[in-house]
Amino acid sequence: MTDAVGSIDMPDAEAPESKKKARKGGKRAKKGPLKRLATFYRQIIAELRKVVWPTRNQLTTYTTVVIVFVVIMIGLVTVIDYGLNHAAKYVFG
Image (cartoon, rainbow, N blue to C red):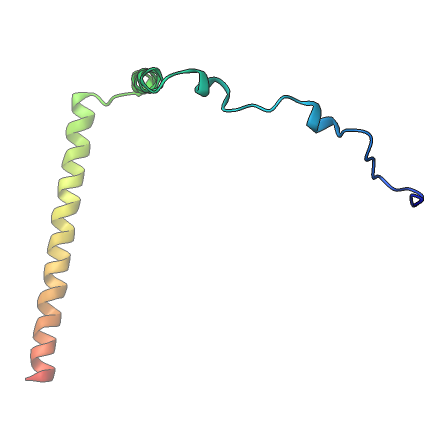
């Protein structure tokens, strides 16, 4: 059988990708599960050291803002609930 002109089929030649050695997990496959777990925890601690922790004054301010916001939202929901409750009693008797 003759090949078509311009055919890219090369049955005798291997593709360049197939010459590469297949990896079976890289560096992780060489370490045991306990070493991987230890590495994971070391990385967590390293990342936590990069965190910019708030000062006591900042933390107090943030906490106060959150508590005030929650109290305002509780009041708003209470007023809306009270109003809808009376509206439902008025409509349905």
